[in-house]
Structure formats: structure tokens, C-alpha cells
Image 1 (cartoon, helix red, strand yellow):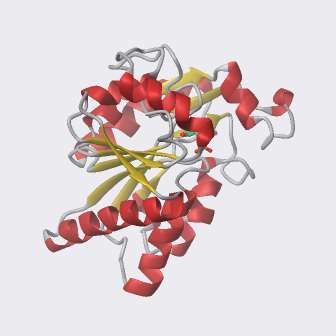
Image 2 (tube, rainbow, N blue to C red):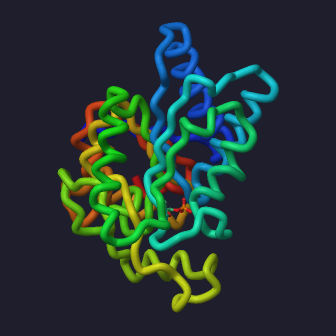
Length: 249
Ligand code: GLP
């Protein structure tokens, strides 16, 4: 078991610590005149992290001009200006409030035709590859152990692709979509392979509702039925938890 777990009093203090690590990385890359390649996540868990990064930008002059970001996933189909799109989420929580260049942030495109998706996913990975890979990947975790939208059964070498969402993932999202019948059945997700290739991985989990899956991901065997457990085989992955999410460890 390689995963480090770090437990904070609450999600606010935890998010501040993670934001500081990201700020330090961005500044190191700036000093080296290098781009900083970040893998970003959506969901409720990273909201406090993005709020702190925005604060560091506004109050402490942290610049995102050398940041190139790649989001993990997007529902499919999904229009970018729809209330539930991850493009919109990222603009509202981060991109609109910092100086990242518009051409430098990437979120998988939910508007493609089915025929275009496979090629698009290959290109998405190629762009990451051409920049030297992800310097740091932020993750949340689904109640079933999914990372991005790599649901149970996703392989450790899975590529970026169109996936079918699990029923419980759709149920969890159905509140946002005003009912299960309106909730997308598919999504585009970065594959497990690219996540595992990130030089550093930080998974965020808050609250009692995540405590069982955190225990399973970190203490049980590595299994494709809990994709977050693959991170046990990453040599620089940390689970950043609040007390409640860590309560079963
Ligand atoms: C969605 C996202 C995941 C996220 C998960 C957990 O399924 N695609 O990337 O980790 O939700 O969300 P939350 O952080 O709201 O618990």
C-alpha cells in the first residue's frame, strides 16, 4: 500500500493545504519557464480548493498564465452552456476568476457526434502527452469508487473514452438533472492510464458518506471493481481527507 492519507480537521483547512501545494508547483514551473500541466476534477469536493486558488490569485498574486489544464470528464451529450455542464462548472468556480488563458483550459467536448468521439479522445491524450504528461491530477471519488467517470470494471490501462454511467452514479446526479429520466447515460472520461501516469495525484474526499469507499480504496485489495484502489500502485498519490471521510480507517 503506497497511498498516503492525510487527515485534516475539516475540508476548508484541507483545501487550503492542497491549494498551497498547487500554488508552489505553479511557481516552481514559472521559475523554470515551464508550463504547469494540471488535471482537474468537478463535483462538490474540489469547490473549496478552487475557491482557495481564486483567493490566492486575487490576494496573493498567484498567476495561472503558465497553467494548462485538462478536466477529467464531461457528460455526453452535453452543451457547454447547459447548467450541468462541467465546462460551465469550471468557468464558474475557477476559469472566470483567474488569468488562465482560454486556449489553455480543456474540458472533454460533450457536443461531438458519436463517430467523432474515439478520435477526439485520442487527441485529448496526445495533447497531454505532448506537454510531457500531467504534473498533478486532482480527483474526487464517487460513492462506488469511481475516479473521473471510470466506473467499476474500468481497467487500469483504460484509455480516454465514452463510458456508460452506473445506475448509482446516475441516481447521485439525478438531483442536478431534475430526475433520473433527464440524467445522461454516458460520459467522456480520461482513462485510468493517464490518471496513473500523472506525476502526482491528490484525491479529495469529505464527509461520512465517503468513509466506506475510502476504507475500501486504501485498505482492501487493488481491484477494478473499485477504480480508486488502483492508486495504491501509484508512487505519489495522497488521499486528502477530513475527519469524517477518514473515520473508518
Ligand atoms: C462525479 C464526477 C467525479 C466526482 C464524483 C464525486 O461523478 N464525475 O469526478 O469525483 O462525482 O462527486 P462529489 O465530489 O460531489 O462527491
